[in-house]
Length: 170
Picture (cartoon, helix red, strand yellow):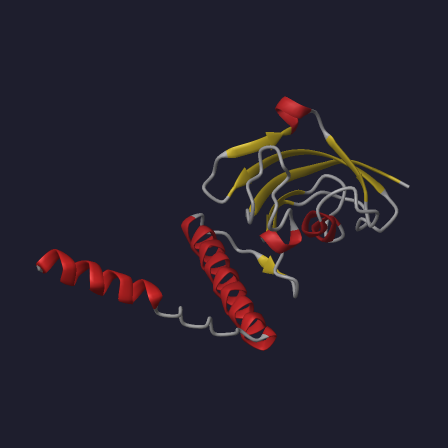
């Protein structure tokens, strides 16, 4: 009798129509994505502020979120768009792990304003002079963003460059 009753309840529950899925509007999706993005941006900003405090840096912050500090002043005129800059560099992630360096990969050359490097580094170069040694913090949205570089830089990585400008050409 118990088996018959259990089978009857099971059959009855299977026969019920499934509840209709609630439709999610485009506005709800957009608001959800914006909320998630704000969270990620705020989380990255907190990580950057903690890095600056831990390393006792005195960074200049631009409106884009890129930060830089000239550690040793060079000479010459300020770098301008169109100039080719050669630099020695060490690229770390925010945890301090070295990702790339000129010691291992050779010096980096970039034509300023031509998209040769990530936009945050390109922006920083415009604030520097020949001979400057600088630390540059590039938030992920000015670096490799959601995808990383598909090699050694993970998605959503804040990049820390230590660079020395060794040559500027017109």
